[in-house]
Length: 242
Image 1 (tube, rainbow, N blue to C red):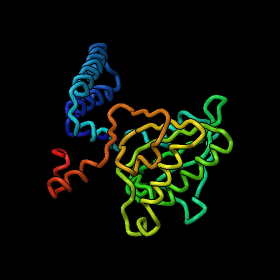
Image 2: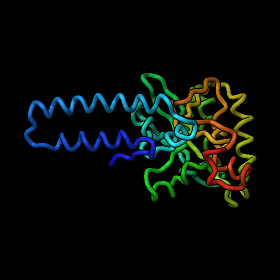
Image 3: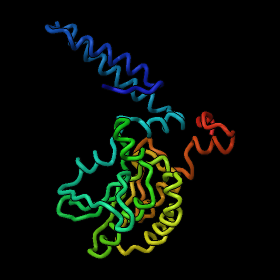
């Protein structure tokens, strides 16, 4: 089922009209022409809407629940992916996927923040918010990549590092800081790609790199809009203004 944002309402109406006409069992030539015109009109409407997006609308698109997530990119781009679990200190963090794969004949290391598609998956993935063990797992993979001279690709998509009490007790700030220090001197190339949200140190903890890329309609900032609104206005609901 397609999901539409509020400003995509004209596209939703056209999709409903197209679906209605395509459901006709024996369409006439006139109906076929109407469908073709509607598809053309839909494309024009998409171009019109997306050519004048506000900053907040781009944030909404970055959070779109049907946007490709890290596992989608891994499945579509890479071959022979082998996932590695755990930081060898505390445990595993499902909010970050790490391992090794091939792209063409080249072997690479992958570190990718992963959100869930539904409530159950989001609870398992912690909504893409990494804990200290996640950052340490990421560094474990980077050190292995350095040892075997493999380039590193990181995919960033997080609303921020997890701010829970347990994460703080296990050294959230220290884990991120160590990643920043070690990534800045890693002896293999690192490519980082923002595929959705890139919030603060939560993203930066796997984002120090030699080449930095951002997909269309993504954002990368020192703080999330809600966090900024909480500081400026004492009201997270004013995120659009922030």
